[in-house]
Amino acid sequence: MSPLNSLFKNAKLALTDAQTALDNLTGSAIDLTVPTVRLGVTGLARSGKTVFISALVHNLIAGGRLPLLDAAGTGRLARAYLQPQPDDNVPRFNYEQHVETLTKDRLWPESTHQISELRLTIEYESATFLNRQLGGGKLHLDIVDYPGEWLLDLVLLRQDFRQFSEEALKRAKARPDLSEEFLSTLARYQDKLHDEFSEDIARGLANTFTTYLSRCRDDENALSMLPPGRFLMPGDMKGTPALTFAPLNLGDTQVKPKAGTLLAIMERRYEAYRKHVVRPFFKNHFAKLDRQIVLVDALTAINAGPEALDDLSGALTEIMGAFRPGKASWLFSIVSRKIDRILFAATKADHLRREDHDHLELLLKQLVERAINRAEFSGASVETLALASVRATRQATVHQDGAETPALLGTPMPEETIGEMKFDGEEEAAIFPGDLPDDLGDLFSTEQNHDTPEDQTALKYVRFRPPKLERTAEGLTLSLPHIRLDSAMEFLLGDKLA
Picture (cartoon, rainbow, N blue to C red):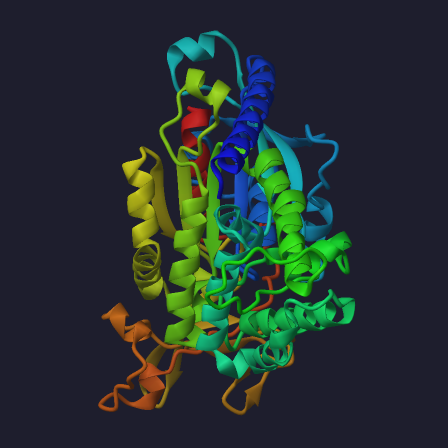
């Protein structure tokens, strides 16, 4: 890059930062009347973002059982209610529909495919005598829901087209079983890179690249490092030139491509993706967050095997690298907001026996160890937690042939299988999912332990339907049950409700 281009690039970044600072200054002026916390909720596909937000809001509005949220456990939480969100150009999170799907249909709501927002206002009594004399407390909680795949795109801001191509092809070549069609298509057009641009060739490369990414994301593979994220979640950008490109095998050549060639146009479209997709997401949404929760579906990765777990660890490290962690102060947050609390949460803890929850949390710590060290060094508070936003199972004990076997009792989703058994989605079943090993390193090993009976080492996690809501003796319907959702709330919001 020439000195002039480097100067121009730095000037553009400075202008973007200045605009972000001005936006934060405006938001801070409004916050002087009612404090606002902008909570980012993200995670990779099927990690439970929609369920987490729905359960959090439902339990606060409906007065759910939240003993570990201090404001609720001490009776200081007065009420919580929804209000119009502050950003009129962002889709509203469809809370009402999602809760109806969970409670009435007993189905899991659709996954996050775009950014959405919801404002929840919480009224509470302060824990300190002085603040209580000044009146009741109030907090706006702006929840920003966005796909984790979009977060992984932020790494592209520091990669030019060559660097992106090298990284993407390295991952593709490591999984020829998934990328064969794309790699063969790329090889077929290798000698066309400097020929006149062909839309048919570009579309063929983009389509086979997208198919490869989609195969990576399937449950049986559960790979996570899949940028560009919009290729799998295109929304209204489907078919646009900014999503019609693919990584190319550029070799050692450093010659600037001739205008109008396949290589030049593919490089231009990559830059358009960074300019029109990635940068606006960073500027308009990500750079304005105060707190962040990253939901992690470690169980699906365990089901898929060691390679999926290793890939998940790499993705989580990249996700943390995208944050701007640091200790926030009131004055500093006016100029440049910092995410000062980050929670990594392993979801679907209800798919494990209670005795394995600590193992699941320890596994998560291992997956994000490098990322956590980086954030803590910058002054941010980071924690890990195993939770179930909605608890779909109950602990049970099965008595058979004079022996007692611990199990989970719940209703498996239709078409879920264990061995030759297929569930219909209606009947409850007692299932022993297997135990996480004491040595979690075994999960990252491809070697099998032949000294242990197969039925004790096999780990198989099935999906369960949401539970039927319990009723009190007076006929009142209780709120959605959970595991440690209140612990997550306390870490993310407890200091703001003190």
